[in-house]
Image (cartoon, rainbow, N blue to C red; front, side, top):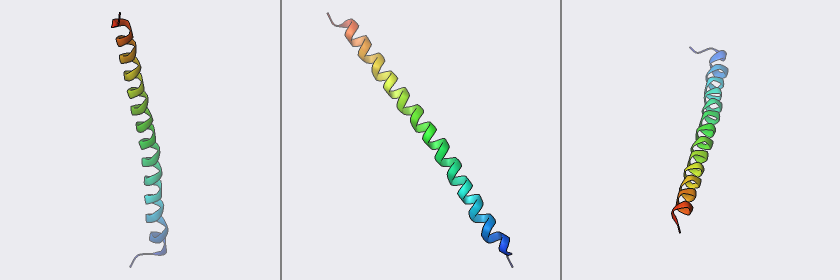
Length: 52
C-alpha cells in the first residue's frame, strides 16, 4: 500500500522534470533562433557584396 509520501513525492518529481524540461527547451529554442538569424544576416551580407 502506498504511503502518503507517494502522493507528494511523485507529483513533485514530475513537476521538477517539467520545469527542467521547460528551461532546457527554451534555451535550445533561443539558441536555434539566434543561429537562424545569424545565418540570414550572413546570407544578406554575402548577397549585398556580390551585387554590382
